[in-house]
Length: 142
Image 1: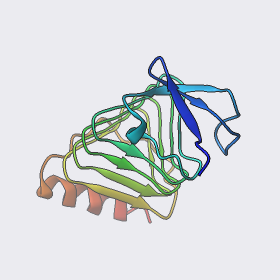
Image 2: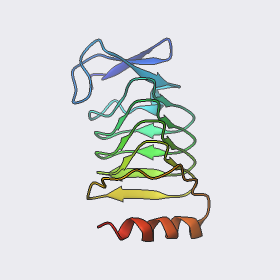
Image 3: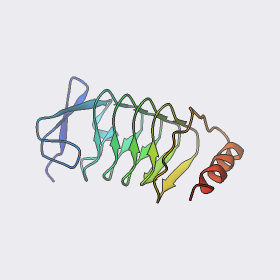
Image 4: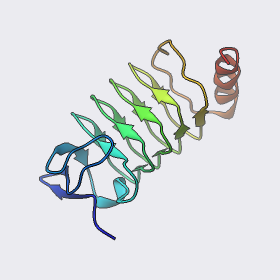
């Protein structure tokens, strides 16, 4: 398998062209190689930061000033951008978009098959009850 990136001074550096990056491009900050999959076109760019045991994979894209950390996973065609945070055991997948000042944390899964044209305020999801309330809220927009 040919590597997609290497780490230089804490930044991912592209070793090939991909959906979100060109060969030689310096991407965002990652703590270790295990934070960004070598498979697919997943990428971290701008001032985005991925650390801890977090993983970005598939064709996901983390950019802007976004942070992904803890044991969080961003995968599929998901995007995390702006000042958004995804942390804890959160999972963001499918066509989901987490952006602006949104915060998703704890044990929570977001999988979107549709795109929403609104911005959620910064939200901290730490309990199952709160997660269910947010799922209900999001379901109303389908």
